[in-house]
Length: 321
Image (cartoon, rainbow, N blue to C red; front, side, top):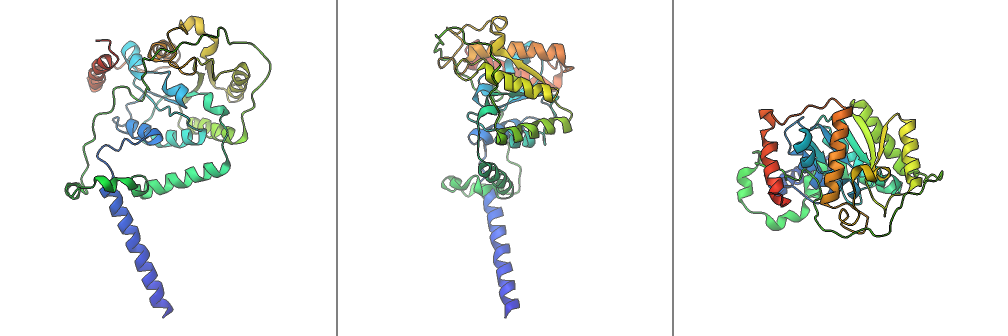
């Protein structure tokens, strides 16, 4: 009797597993560009394998500060901005780990604002579990898509669905809104250090370790942001960089070289850069890559002709045509 019950239980669990697995693939959308973390992950994973020279990761300070298409036009380097608003460092780590399964960038730019966003270990554990479950059962991620199910999906089961072309912004969060920062100079030197809490520091070390393991040059940078930045935060990031032999670029200390004009280059009173400010940061970072790395200019390479086409669309979308 016990043996029969075990067989029934095993049969039920096996059937449930198969049902979830099949349903998952029926409900995966044609354009699986979800929000936030998954939008960025799926966006860069649509790029041809091992064609991205550098990636930028971090929170919204990252997503608003580097436009890969500007770097492409001026220097011919292929990049993707994987910044996600309000992202915590454990999410940044999992996103980067996923990206590196499909791409082999030589450089990773990590924006520092998320260093100072604390979170609980339980959230970290939940993220780890969710990542695993979503890989096995995409239905967990796309459970609402039953509303849009139609029987044509059955015809495509087992076939590779053609993905739409990646956005020409390459992950950059475009905004031409101008909302000036008006409160004057904000850089005041101090010896104070904004301590990076235990949990963010754990994942910061994991990100650094992952880059070392993959032989990737990890560069820390702080985007211009009078609202979010402080000299105490600078000292903390600089200390971590020194301890780990990393480059740290604090753009808040180089506003004049950048040519940032706070009357025109912020979208929200000095919190984030707008498109006009991002163009200046992108030029600065592109120049840095040109002078301090061995990245290759691909602009005349036929294998990257699609980037030149996408740049033309980018000009139209940013009203530069």
